[in-house]
Image 1: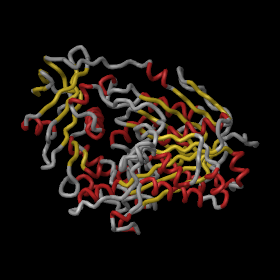
Image 2 (image 1 turned 90 degrees about the horizontal axis):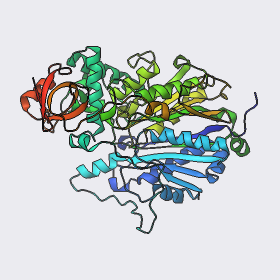
Image 3 (image 1 turned 60 degrees about the vertical axis):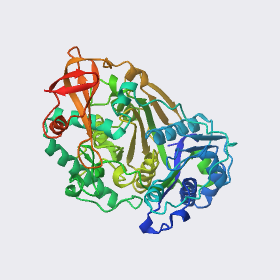
Length: 520
């Protein structure tokens, strides 16, 4: 089978996990800054290919850096390019969102397939653990990292920074992704008819399965493999964050990690002398958003965007989810994992087929928005050892708002496949198929919202964030008016907060006034 010279392939991968107990410096001020950690990941990706890696890094035409949260740069891509000694024509820093790494790999692959560039680097890196440790240290050590001069132009972004919430959602605290994700969690639980305690332990067992995967992943941050009892039991070291989530059910951003992907055309790989056994083809990808604001989503138990992305990504290649041997569903929350796995047709609780290859953002680590770079690198590593297999990476941004899927294989993807869902735009170049189902998803019904609703309402779902003292601090409630409009309300009364975390409140009636709901 002839291979199109423009076919995009991932050829170099690098991951750095700089644990303080694993060789990282105990002296906080001696630890290198995020872009230096990124440069170490690029060095690993280069070493992954020996001499050919050095040549390809020098040829980089597009450098995409996941914007670090742990240190503020005016242009992190420019800083990294300077450390690497390269001058790519395209230097980009990502807009916010955990979907961005896979989305940028898709964009790089499409640009390569179109003939617009030959070599791209996608890199992420954070010093979250170091920054957090410096804040907690009694001496408050100064981190002597680079502060770019004001004369350095601000970074060119991969896209616009979109507001995550409406004003009404923001007033009720839904800018916190964990708080917003718990809305989905209680809706899923109530729909399944599971009591609160039973559901909490179900999540703990699922996360213990993920922890076991992380224990076998050399790049994971936390390889302790905690038990379900440790994960589900709230207490010192594992406080409740937002019911039913303990800290060990949430992403861990206090990590010092970096990852890099070297993506190029088959032609560039051949010219550089990259052995074919290092090639992993990007066969298909899809990028799509759900109805952006929580207020407008029809339910909190599904994701039409993830469903469309799954159908388009797998269908354009002509395979089903059972053909995928190496799967990483972005477990940014238990609810996000369950919803996307369900749309894929995967059982998120099946120990015979864990839905992650890394161990997920809690245990593998969640370096800002960069988790997806690690996920792709881990899938690539597995596919090199399993050349005939398929690998799928799904990424999610915010509270199930944005989705990006990527389908990988060591062998060239086969021709053909099924027609995509109606309203899906597909571009096929050099064997890579990119799908855009946005028009189809945007045309789906939306929930009408009413920020000023009052009177009798029904509790649709809710989220209860906890305070530092370990007790419920407040609640945000999604309410449905008699005519089906959605409004948001708060609960602060201690007795009603206790009711929300001990009894089934989805479907309960209440009276809404001035943004506060009184539960009956």
